[in-house]
Length: 561
Ligand code: ADP
Image: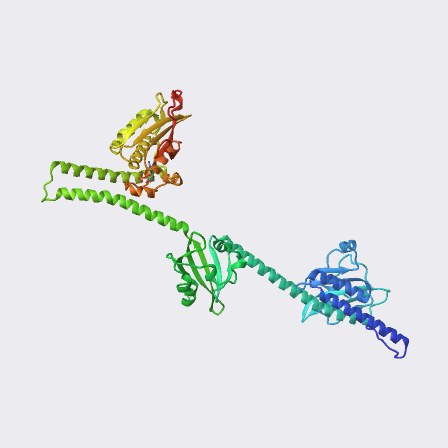
């Protein structure tokens, strides 16, 4: 089937043939350059078929791309309009002629494809073909697919020159496809790497701990958002900076750790991993207490190439520790003081060689009794607090006369109020309260005791009551040291005692008011403190519910405080 060219060297036909060939070579070169510049695989495939068709001048061209299993993955056509393309039906199966071409080293040129013994394998509605030129596209032993051209313009068969042009073009197409494949692979790797970096960053940023990595020169190479928040800087400001500049850790006494005991250096020096220490990060007004966990980063040969440091803000834990220490020292002080007194007085009484007079004995015994009361009060406060907090204390409301409640509380606090002038300011004909009498009385007693504890002897303490809608507001007013505005809420928290009391040296655990708050709130009321109007000192108020069904309208509201 090959065509024989015989050239008459002197004929003008030779000049014409040479010019024609040159033109074709130029077209081939342009086509090759054009496809070499294309890196998008889809565009490249289309370009290859289009350029191959224009290179030899034919009606149709098609390119089949095969997968590893030699099955055709895509089928790209040129010269077939969209409608005809849709009507084509299933793509070729890669058998018959197309299968032959895949394995052939040379182009297959047919003057009439219908005469070929294996002309099957084309899409069912393929435009009618007669002349045919097909070739495989390969690069470095790898077959990408095949390219075929049919129906050469002018009705004649494809020539040997066509076949050679297409062979050279197919070789170029193989190179271009390999380039595009490699390019796509690199792009995919880059996309995967970016995706992995983003996922890693998302993981790092989702933890509530600061994390950063250092290289072997102690410079920061990576940092998560939590660590950045601790420094108040941006990633650009810290990446590449030495770690001691960005995270100047100190000991709790303000000594720099970076010189002497830098955790990163210690980790690298000792080849340790999981090195843990506590430090302070003095970056803001209030230095941040942190726990540091340092781990070495190794390369593939096991050499340490950097460290990763995890910084955890332990402010809360420190606060809890401090509160716990305070509670322990407060409670143990409150336990030890009365015990020491009891021990002292009882030892004195038991001294065999001392004869105490009756009055002193009674005095000692009274003191022992008083201190024992104090001890039992402390223990019951602690128990009550825990019961109230856990909801194990049940309030048993019943109709209670407010005046009776106030007088009973004053009477029971008698010992404490001995040195004070107590006034009661309660309107008559108040409706009754619907409260647990013991618990409500406890609130009043506690407030009265405090009023006495925190005000000078002979000063006045007033107990007031006012109706406020469905509630009665009870008040205990003293002329004592008062409560600073900043502490007015805090004093209702457990174990809170104010600094200012130190001068008073009054015993206490800071539990009384928090117990009052729990009791009042369990009744649906509120408790708060104000400055004592019209004098110094404080006024503690709390509300309790009135027994609504049986109530009478208030007859008077006197002396609103
Ligand atoms: P305690 O009296 O046992 O310390 P409380 O819970 O009853 O505990 O009171 C908490 C703190 O509130 C007290 O230590 C004191 O500092 C302050 N406080 C309570 N009542 C008064 C008051 N009437 N005047 C001034 N300060 C008071």
